[in-house]
Length: 212
Length: 147
Image (cartoon, rainbow over the protein chains, first blue to last red):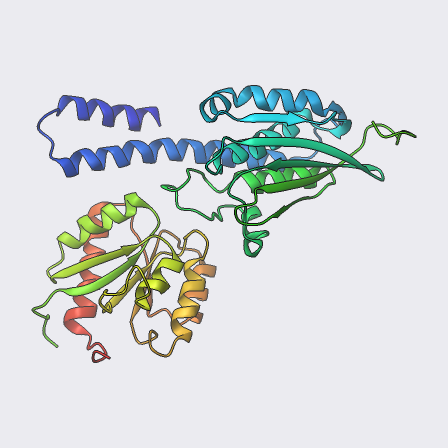
């Protein structure tokens, strides 16, 4: 990608002043196209790697996972003025790296698909038998129930990339990770009412007598 | 039928700004004088064709170029709705897509696409394909009389 984008940008520099508006526009499209291809390839690699079973299943502290995800998104958080808060989060059984990817994608979406207000995201967890049901709730643009299943299908998007950038891989990846953990991922939402992404994950500890 | 002297109206349903630009470039090489209208998704396409706001004064296109990979409402869904509409189904639909999967081809024809064309990656070939499409549909084919 660097070769493609780099050469185009050098070309643009060398031809400074000699290119008409349409030519400049075309080079812009080419450079953007190269960047998008890069993102797409990275996303597809991540997606295909989730499938390989045999990764170590360990005790994973979700608070650490969340902290990692938030740290990876520090630029987007700062730029959007996002506030991400959470209830005490439990330990689950799974793959820490994959879970970090899952939370990072959900949080990135919460930030990206924001409304007029700065993004507010709340992460909580409720015990459900042998599982924890984790909720990632935002105050963004929300989703029409008509599209509740479509958004989890790879490459299916609800917006053009000029409206919101994206490859259409993120939620498919999240669902694949959830399923690999023996859990489920789904959404509750309404247009303009934010979205609540719900996820079940196997608990690492037996249920306590009192709620945490 | 001879090539018309007034520009023919084409509706392009395409969400990628890059593909829009490339299609416009390709159409400039076409010998058939054409006016390109553009919408970025299926819902907008239906609104345009039904002349609903903000498309109230828009002309009825003589040809529709339809991408399959669209947000919100896929090209297949648009095609199904178009061909179920007794007024709109007489407008020829050329599915113009990057896809070459058998599933997409079969589904498109099952939904009565007039034809299925995979966009060549190479621009020169793409320009040739667009020119051929226009030549075929507007210089060779007899289109239905205006409704």
